[in-house]
Image (cartoon, rainbow over all chains, first blue to last red; front, side, top):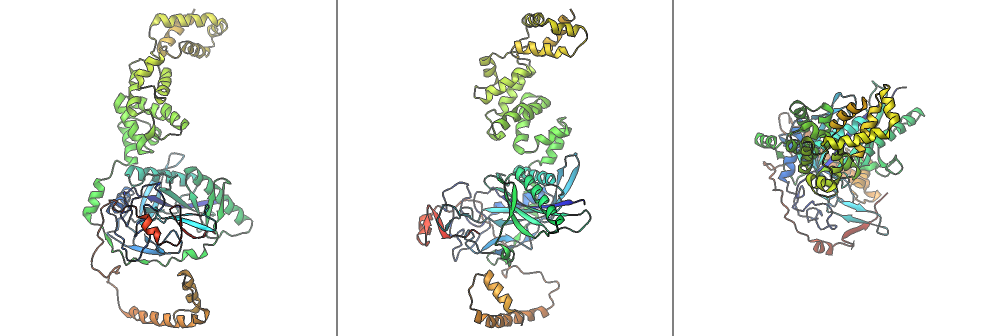
Length: 476
Length: 95
């Protein structure tokens, strides 16, 4: 029997404001416990929440970027539940009237096709504090620094049909919030958290019962958790069982999802409008200002890279995945004047080093200016592409800019015909068997000679010249 | 009676209010009385009336995004029942 997976996502994006959503406390990450928790954040009697203007602006920016309906009037509501990291006994959120209504985001599937994913809504709310269960015998430690941090909860339609589609959506959204400058996207620090709703059905049937998976703090975990959960649900149904609607936690160490027990009551949140807060009104002028503050969005930038810079769709897609990479690439391209060369080196040599050293492009020791400087030396034939790899590594290791590394490591390309000729002669003399093969028609051996010559010159010989000389000499 | 005894038990549990079992019927009756009175409002024709989120005829004033609070942890924690390493301690809550 054929099964179809149905996935919807709820993403909590922490807004990059300076202060909390309803108080003047800092939201800086990593402070000493409870040093950023004021009377409002502690839920003391008699205090009143005052809404942060910047949080509203960021929500508008996001709403416009996904072409959503923006509510001219939205209302904050109390979501009631008891937990010690929520000192008021309710979370201030939005329920019936969220600030951002129906919008959408287009994702690119593996086969290159575009799929439109609906975004049901996005609403503003406050985060809760943190509970530390481990270190206190029989007690729980509460840190309220995070309580009141502004969040935008972004709820998708159940439009995704595979783990891969879900990951593509999350990545696209992740890139978008970072482009917009509304969220730093740091998944390790919890700035961008995903809850995934998964169900299975036979194609054409009604939606199945869904399970919600929490605790997914990397793209890889999302994919693995969905795959595990889909298999679990199919096995369960095929062996005569039933999926129950519940919250499950993903355990990356065991690569499985587990039921979170003891939460049966928690779904009765008894929402009601918060009497401490008035409706938020968005004027046409507010919208105009938000629209004017939008940067060039990833999709538009990708199209520009294709049409104006002549990049392939794939290259343009990779380069615009993150704003930092796209900015870096544009700086390199402008610096060296050759967009294709810049694209190749940013996605090739540089990207390999970033992966190897697990470094973000914004923290790379090789700046865009340094890489552009090196590419100029390829373009003016000071170095070969082979030697350039050494130069890049030298720059990464802190040996200075391209010119300094070229001088220090002696990587200047040899364009002196005499010097290369001497190497070529030596290689030919050393390898009579291969010369014989080549002359008897096995032209593949030519690559062997090029490789040997380049190696003997330590990558410094001008490859064009090497080719020319070898062709000439091997003719015999 | 619009509020059943089961509903009284459920709501008191959700609100973390301890009530004696013998008082449940009394609460059910009193709460029903209140809700029955409110129910009379349902007789009013409200079509064309916008829902009211707040009785003040005003909209939310917004705050500039500036950090104005300083660290007052010692003062706040002086009135907490128990603290350790800067954390507020509560009875263990994990399932």
